[in-house]
Image (cartoon, rainbow, N blue to C red; front, side, top):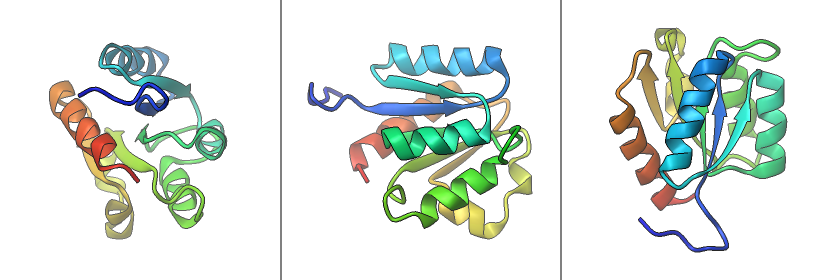
Length: 128
């Protein structure tokens, strides 16, 4: 999908495992996304407020602030509530029903990369 040159699709990859963060960043970069990276919950929440990415891929078990708290705080803030979240975690079963409703998609590690990219593309096209 072609995007307007003044607004490339953007994704914030939030993952404390540096190798997986780099892998996801490369995958999204090769798919035409502007990629931002965060390695802990506090950094992620700050970047969401500053950059307003289209999509956030979010691990749950993060140093600083847990992924669930990043999700809740972002969705409860009127300035960032339209950011789309794809939860990517080995601990996805720990999400409450309320948190699942806040997330746009949930993938359990290990996950299907192609399926995740399809989901991200749909969310990016849908806008906020």
